[in-house]
Image 1 (tube, one colour):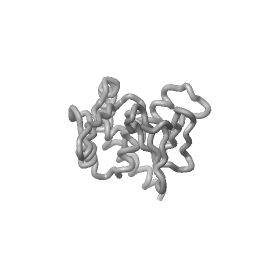
Image 2: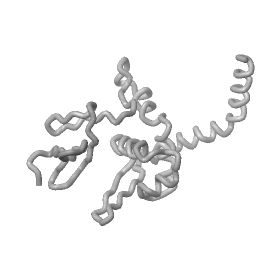
Image 3: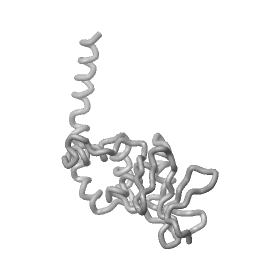
Image 4: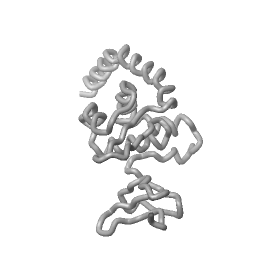
Length: 167
């Protein structure tokens, strides 16, 4: 077991965070990564910063996290299963890149919406499942989906009218 909890792999751009002899978190090193004692600050190439003017605003903070292109789709896909392996989740969302799926899952795990379970097998098996917090969000998500279905035709018609008026 390494004495330093942060190990850089020579000749690569990866750092591994160790605890009790196990790799907790592999990180891809860029100029946006830095390691300070036992705290790892990671810029995951997505805009996850709180609004600088209103850092304690729950609406801005939470909507910033869940209103991106993939988060709700990943949550909704996981909701149909008790647990889902990464490759199966990727297969159900074929238009998301592997990198974006990894970033989205890490963010959801960080915020307590997803649990990640790693099995000590060869090849490695990782499963993702929703937490109670994520399940508590689904009545709201389902209302949003129903609202979108109820108003989609009207919204598309208004878009068409607005585009016609511009021409």
